[in-house]
Length: 279
Image (cartoon, rainbow, N blue to C red; front, side):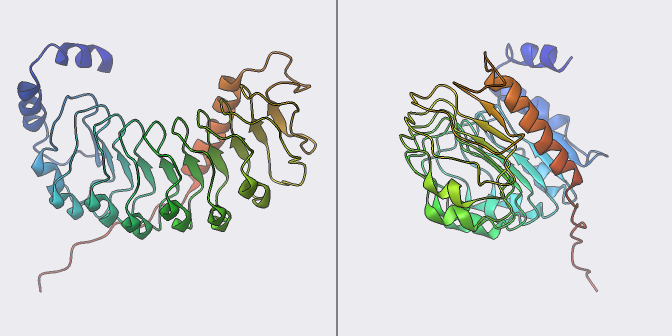
């Protein structure tokens, strides 16, 4: 049904779509979730920022390039989806939402991330895939609770050494970048469970057998001369992987994403932030 509605909305002028969405968001939803994905919005309806108990806000697949400063009022927000929009820079107001656990920024036009992103110390999952990043922003290495990093389909050639400071990081997705060598920093991160370097330019893989927590490594579509050595029970997806004569990276990703979603469901939910009393 959702796809049918979106298809019909595609036939409606953008200004009328904006008005339709505004009329249908007059009250705080009982599930504390607002999803206006695919609504052809060019600006966020201002009164949404008055829903101070909102937990999830999905703004994916619109025409947004900025956000109102009033968004700072949403101090209970845990999930914010801004993917598939027109952001060339991350609005600073996002960095004020300190309860955020999951932030979707994929498929925009971001070339960097602001230093203020380090204020989001509850962030567990960050999606920055399919942007214009030529290097991984240093500020990512300051997100101490980060468990999952999606940074595929950019133009990354290397990773910063300080990435190893992210002791909680479990999955890292780097497919579709410009890596010519396997990132050395990953060899010093024994807590990683999933490494995806599919569709890069890596010619040689060092041994990964010492990465004691590793469960999946995806290295297909690289011009490599060897397969990475791994520990017992680790799933390899790529050329010369013994257990998959015709490797399918999509199946491995589904497996890894399922593990990731299970981890997110088990993550503790912070208590709501109550407005100060007016006594």
